[in-house]
Amino acid sequence: MSATLLAGAVLIAQIMLVAAMGCAAFRILRGPRAQDRVLALDTLYVNAAMLLLVFGIRTGSTHYFDAALVITLLGFVSTAALSKFLMRGEVIE
Amino acid sequence: MSHAADLPFWAALPVALLLLVGAGLALTGSIGLLTLRSFYERLHAPTLGTTLGIGCILLASMLFFSVLQTRFVLHELLIVFFMGVTTPVTLMLLMRAVLYRDRREGSTEVPPVSPSSEETEG
View 1 (cartoon, rainbow over the protein chains, first blue to last red):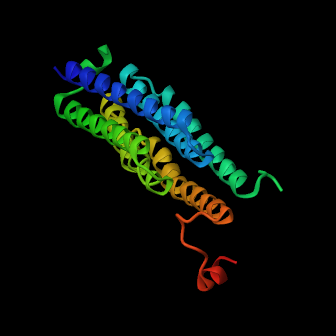
View 2 (cartoon, rainbow over the protein chains, first blue to last red; view 1 turned 180 degrees about the vertical axis):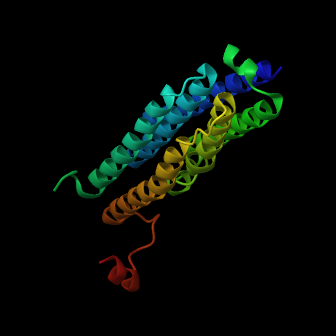
Protein backbone atom coordinates (compact mmCIF):
# COMPACT_ATOMS: atom_id res chain seq x y z
CA MET A 1 0.00 0.00 0.00
CA SER A 2 2.63 2.52 1.05
CA ALA A 3 4.91 1.29 -1.76
CA THR A 4 2.33 1.96 -4.47
CA LEU A 5 1.44 5.36 -2.96
CA LEU A 6 5.08 6.36 -2.86
CA ALA A 7 5.79 4.99 -6.34
CA GLY A 8 2.94 7.02 -7.81
CA ALA A 9 3.98 10.21 -6.00
CA VAL A 10 7.62 9.78 -7.09
CA LEU A 11 6.57 9.21 -10.71
CA ILE A 12 4.31 12.30 -10.78
CA ALA A 13 7.00 14.40 -9.06
CA GLN A 14 9.60 13.27 -11.61
CA ILE A 15 7.31 14.15 -14.51
CA MET A 16 6.60 17.60 -13.03
CA LEU A 17 10.31 18.26 -12.43
CA VAL A 18 11.23 17.23 -15.96
CA ALA A 19 8.52 19.57 -17.27
CA ALA A 20 9.98 22.36 -15.10
CA MET A 21 13.45 21.65 -16.52
CA GLY A 22 11.95 21.77 -20.01
CA CYS A 23 10.44 25.22 -19.29
CA ALA A 24 13.82 26.49 -18.07
CA ALA A 25 15.63 24.98 -21.08
CA PHE A 26 13.14 26.62 -23.45
CA ARG A 27 13.79 29.97 -21.77
CA ILE A 28 17.54 29.44 -22.25
CA LEU A 29 16.96 28.85 -25.96
CA ARG A 30 14.56 31.75 -26.45
CA GLY A 31 16.40 34.42 -24.45
CA PRO A 32 15.78 37.18 -25.46
CA ARG A 33 18.77 38.67 -23.59
CA ALA A 34 21.78 37.30 -21.73
CA GLN A 35 20.30 37.88 -18.26
CA ASP A 36 17.25 35.74 -19.05
CA ARG A 37 19.57 32.89 -20.00
CA VAL A 38 21.56 33.23 -16.76
CA LEU A 39 18.37 33.20 -14.67
CA ALA A 40 17.03 30.17 -16.57
CA LEU A 41 20.34 28.34 -16.11
CA ASP A 42 20.11 28.94 -12.34
CA THR A 43 16.57 27.54 -12.33
CA LEU A 44 17.70 24.55 -14.40
CA TYR A 45 20.44 23.76 -11.86
CA VAL A 46 18.02 23.81 -8.93
CA ASN A 47 15.48 21.67 -10.78
CA ALA A 48 18.19 19.15 -11.63
CA ALA A 49 19.21 18.96 -7.96
CA MET A 50 15.58 18.33 -6.97
CA LEU A 51 15.26 15.64 -9.64
CA LEU A 52 18.35 13.89 -8.25
CA LEU A 53 16.91 14.00 -4.71
CA VAL A 54 13.65 12.45 -5.94
CA PHE A 55 15.69 9.82 -7.77
CA GLY A 56 17.47 9.07 -4.49
CA ILE A 57 14.10 8.46 -2.79
CA ARG A 58 13.07 6.22 -5.70
CA THR A 59 16.17 4.01 -5.50
CA GLY A 60 16.52 4.17 -1.71
CA SER A 61 20.18 5.16 -1.90
CA THR A 62 21.77 8.22 -0.28
CA HIS A 63 24.53 8.54 -2.90
CA TYR A 64 22.45 10.85 -5.10
CA PHE A 65 22.45 13.40 -2.28
CA ASP A 66 26.17 14.16 -2.88
CA ALA A 67 25.50 14.86 -6.56
CA ALA A 68 22.65 17.22 -5.60
CA LEU A 69 24.93 19.04 -3.15
CA VAL A 70 27.63 19.49 -5.81
CA ILE A 71 25.05 20.75 -8.30
CA THR A 72 23.71 23.39 -5.90
CA LEU A 73 27.24 24.61 -5.08
CA LEU A 74 28.26 24.76 -8.75
CA GLY A 75 25.02 26.57 -9.56
CA PHE A 76 25.80 29.26 -7.01
CA VAL A 77 29.36 29.76 -8.30
CA SER A 78 28.35 29.82 -11.97
CA THR A 79 25.51 32.29 -11.46
CA ALA A 80 27.70 34.59 -9.37
CA ALA A 81 30.48 34.46 -12.00
CA LEU A 82 28.07 35.11 -14.88
CA SER A 83 26.51 38.06 -13.00
CA LYS A 84 29.99 39.49 -12.50
CA PHE A 85 30.65 38.99 -16.20
CA LEU A 86 27.43 40.79 -17.17
CA MET A 87 28.31 43.66 -14.84
CA ARG A 88 31.99 44.15 -15.71
CA GLY A 89 32.75 42.27 -18.91
CA GLU A 90 35.29 40.02 -17.21
CA VAL A 91 35.13 37.56 -14.32
CA ILE A 92 38.51 38.04 -12.59
CA GLU A 93 39.95 41.55 -12.61
CA MET B 1 10.68 0.23 -5.22
CA SER B 2 10.89 -2.89 -3.03
CA HIS B 3 12.64 -1.03 -0.21
CA ALA B 4 9.61 1.26 0.19
CA ALA B 5 7.42 -1.67 1.25
CA ASP B 6 9.09 -1.52 4.68
CA LEU B 7 7.93 2.06 5.11
CA PRO B 8 4.87 2.44 7.39
CA PHE B 9 1.85 4.19 5.95
CA TRP B 10 2.00 7.12 8.40
CA ALA B 11 5.43 8.01 6.96
CA ALA B 12 4.64 7.27 3.30
CA LEU B 13 1.70 9.69 3.22
CA PRO B 14 3.59 12.86 4.27
CA VAL B 15 6.57 11.89 2.08
CA ALA B 16 4.30 11.56 -0.96
CA LEU B 17 2.49 14.83 -0.19
CA LEU B 18 5.75 16.75 0.34
CA LEU B 19 7.18 15.38 -2.92
CA LEU B 20 4.10 16.45 -4.86
CA VAL B 21 4.00 19.92 -3.25
CA GLY B 22 7.73 20.49 -3.87
CA ALA B 23 7.63 19.38 -7.49
CA GLY B 24 4.45 21.36 -8.09
CA LEU B 25 6.06 24.53 -6.72
CA ALA B 26 9.12 24.01 -8.93
CA LEU B 27 6.87 23.54 -11.96
CA THR B 28 4.88 26.68 -11.07
CA GLY B 29 8.07 28.71 -10.78
CA SER B 30 9.41 27.45 -14.09
CA ILE B 31 6.11 28.13 -15.89
CA GLY B 32 6.25 31.64 -14.45
CA LEU B 33 9.79 31.97 -15.78
CA LEU B 34 8.49 31.00 -19.20
CA THR B 35 5.35 33.15 -19.38
CA LEU B 36 5.99 36.41 -17.51
CA ARG B 37 6.74 39.37 -19.75
CA SER B 38 9.68 41.46 -18.49
CA PHE B 39 12.94 40.31 -16.90
CA TYR B 40 12.20 42.00 -13.58
CA GLU B 41 8.91 40.08 -13.32
CA ARG B 42 10.57 36.81 -14.34
CA LEU B 43 13.19 37.24 -11.60
CA HIS B 44 10.57 36.54 -8.92
CA ALA B 45 9.11 33.32 -10.33
CA PRO B 46 11.91 30.73 -9.87
CA THR B 47 12.42 31.69 -6.22
CA LEU B 48 9.28 29.65 -5.46
CA GLY B 49 11.13 26.50 -6.47
CA THR B 50 14.52 27.45 -5.09
CA THR B 51 13.27 28.08 -1.55
CA LEU B 52 9.98 26.33 -0.70
CA GLY B 53 10.12 23.72 -3.46
CA ILE B 54 13.55 22.33 -2.67
CA GLY B 55 12.74 22.71 1.05
CA CYS B 56 9.70 20.41 0.70
CA ILE B 57 11.64 17.81 -1.27
CA LEU B 58 14.53 17.85 1.21
CA LEU B 59 12.06 17.46 4.09
CA ALA B 60 10.52 14.47 2.30
CA SER B 61 13.98 12.97 1.75
CA MET B 62 14.94 13.47 5.41
CA LEU B 63 11.69 11.87 6.63
CA PHE B 64 11.99 8.97 4.18
CA PHE B 65 15.58 8.00 5.03
CA SER B 66 15.15 8.62 8.77
CA VAL B 67 12.18 6.24 8.99
CA LEU B 68 13.71 3.70 6.60
CA GLN B 69 17.06 3.47 8.40
CA THR B 70 15.56 4.06 11.90
CA ARG B 71 18.11 6.75 12.71
CA PHE B 72 18.30 10.47 12.10
CA VAL B 73 19.52 11.23 8.56
CA LEU B 74 20.00 14.98 8.64
CA HIS B 75 22.67 15.71 6.04
CA GLU B 76 19.97 17.27 3.81
CA LEU B 77 20.14 20.25 6.15
CA LEU B 78 23.41 21.13 4.35
CA ILE B 79 21.54 21.79 1.10
CA VAL B 80 18.82 23.72 2.97
CA PHE B 81 21.53 25.91 4.50
CA PHE B 82 23.40 26.45 1.22
CA MET B 83 20.26 27.24 -0.76
CA GLY B 84 19.02 29.60 1.94
CA VAL B 85 22.29 31.51 1.93
CA THR B 86 23.11 31.49 -1.79
CA THR B 87 19.75 32.13 -3.50
CA PRO B 88 19.25 35.73 -2.28
CA VAL B 89 22.93 36.52 -2.90
CA THR B 90 22.98 35.28 -6.50
CA LEU B 91 19.66 36.81 -7.47
CA MET B 92 20.61 40.19 -5.96
CA LEU B 93 23.97 40.08 -7.80
CA LEU B 94 22.17 39.28 -11.06
CA MET B 95 19.55 41.99 -10.51
CA ARG B 96 22.19 44.65 -9.76
CA ALA B 97 24.14 43.67 -12.89
CA VAL B 98 21.03 43.86 -15.08
CA LEU B 99 19.99 47.20 -13.55
CA TYR B 100 23.49 48.54 -14.29
CA ARG B 101 23.30 47.30 -17.89
CA ASP B 102 19.82 48.75 -18.44
CA ARG B 103 20.81 52.13 -17.02
CA ARG B 104 23.96 52.24 -19.15
CA GLU B 105 21.88 51.55 -22.26
CA GLY B 106 19.47 54.33 -21.26
CA SER B 107 16.45 52.03 -21.06
CA THR B 108 13.15 53.70 -20.20
CA GLU B 109 11.95 50.62 -18.27
CA VAL B 110 14.10 51.28 -15.20
CA PRO B 111 14.04 54.38 -12.98
CA PRO B 112 17.07 56.69 -13.30
CA VAL B 113 19.70 56.96 -10.57
CA SER B 114 18.49 59.31 -7.83
CA PRO B 115 21.07 61.47 -6.03
CA SER B 116 20.42 59.91 -2.60
CA SER B 117 20.77 56.33 -3.80
CA GLU B 118 23.90 57.20 -5.78
CA GLU B 119 25.62 58.18 -2.55
CA THR B 120 24.81 54.91 -0.83
CA GLU B 121 25.65 52.83 -3.91
CA GLY B 122 28.91 54.71 -4.58
